[in-house]
Image (cartoon, helix red, strand yellow):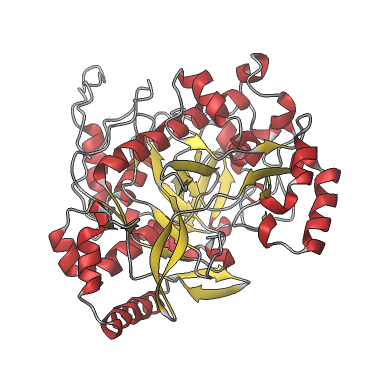
Length: 517
């Protein structure tokens, strides 16, 4: 929030002034009101196997509009490159043939599934939703920490945080031009409908959840409700006649698009884990036949592999012919000559991560680890160098955070969410800022005791639009429908916008008019 010896940064001046006018009791009162509202709404997360209200800090993160013009195109560029990579991985594998990355990196990935090789999504989109984790380093630059294109979560907290903060600080929302986030459900629904199988004019979209005991169930139900679609479990679906159907009180109903929040291995007991009760037998056969779209696509996890992450800058150059807008964090690949030896020599200085880990699990911060932990880690690295990467300790930027003894600096990261409808990659202005609540801690994941902040992107010139993917798809919808609108109105609005300009005689599609963000 503060420049060294120069007062508040320009983007934070009004927030700083508003906080300075509040007494400690008033600030704590607003924080308590936020916590009570989340407890009432059931906005929860899983921590050590226990469901807890999600901690929302009373101090927002503020990003200047011109800074966002750098971040948003960088996120969109990365998503386009990962789309091309996944199409190549489960297709011709040209990047392997051309030496961009070894084939062994792909086939040894935990989340590479040969069962989906050759499945082509109806509109060519595999990464309908993505969450790209960013950090601001000590040089005040943005770097990509990891990619999440499997089943990225957290956007429900973005929407809930914004509503709660607007109620807690109405004076700031009146004074600042803060870009809205309420358009996300409509954008997501439009992308899912655009991904429907060919020949389906009015697709049925459902959200597939593992059930009420899943740590992200709040998000699943929120997205289904705001999109106006059904929230289903695996037992609500069945496959018959080469199609997927949903059981309803009026009889069966065809399902065209499944926005699944179930991991790959549990989706279809015929193809993957035979003991799974979370999916539905035959889903993958229907996906291969092109009668249903699964979003995000099965097998995307190979792009989440942290060893593949190290090749993404080269993949951007290879597939897009562009220089990366956002740089990676410097990373050691332990299978490369000399890398393992160097990392073992500096183990107490580095952060070591399992390549298939998530939620901060398995991560070891060398400077904070005990001698016994480092000894055990050393043995694991020697035994399985492919399973780990190492990075220098990045001193994440800090933001004032309200803790027991007042406002104190705490480390944060940022997860912007992007939606790909096949025509455009739209980046939600802001995203989920996660904060490590214990002093000095660098792990920000909610599953490790972290909290969140509302992320405010200030107005000004809208971000540069991502380069359009050359596909023939429905016209992008406008952004006129608020999140609090009737979900059925949102669905009707999306359908109307997608049909605007089509001629009944020959089905010709008009030129797409660029819309403002």
